[in-house]
Image 1 (cartoon, rainbow, N blue to C red):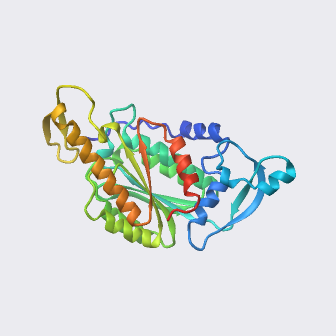
Image 2: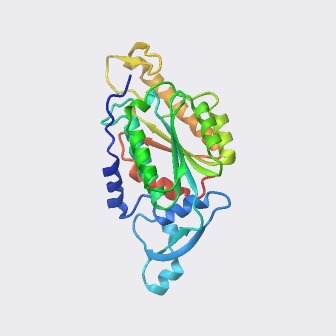
Image 3: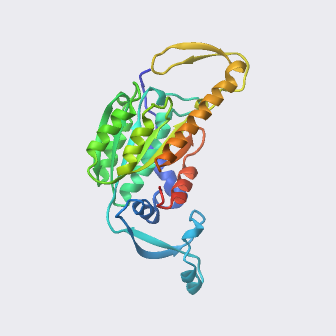
Length: 298
């Protein structure tokens, strides 16, 4: 099914982030945490600032707080820049929604917040869009131009549809990146390829890898209602009629098992996995995930 119109609202999403934390999603401290996960990279103390409710309590400097009679956390700056790269699924299965947003639209807003935050912290960012091949690929670079390129390509309906071939995309990305990078693989991971674990393991051996699984509620379970439904394979267009009562538990069990396999794949490769749903705001889960990782992706 071709995508006719792309409705993700990228810029207001960034404003929402600014209102919530009064800074970009990736504060200087969080950027340091990302950079410190890259072997050979580090962070450098810059200054103190007042503790806020969005901060991890583990970042409080108790000695400095006692001296100043204020609760303070340390601010860091990067001693070197690092590369981040987003490998984004634009295949047919991402063109689905039982909520107000298609999975691809929700994905665009998630990635745009991270993308802009990393750029704003003076780090290089690149991206690739993939389906049955890589449709667009931009190597990591600095500057606002990168975000403009990303916004243009992620919002172009021509870049969506087709099969999902992660292994082919992984080959091309690894040949593009000539230094260690933090790679975000963003997909619904519907229909896991049998060699997914193989390529995640290869990528993780060289780079730091974070999976971002974005699923619609229907990817998890069918609605609890009586009657028959028509299910369509997004890749072959084949359809079947099912009775909701008969297949509800079977469908839910299958999807739970698929997600469990995915968790095992990333855990087995010493990579991280963030799970998001299109019927829930991404902001708090994403912020908690970054803080919980705290530079310890492995």
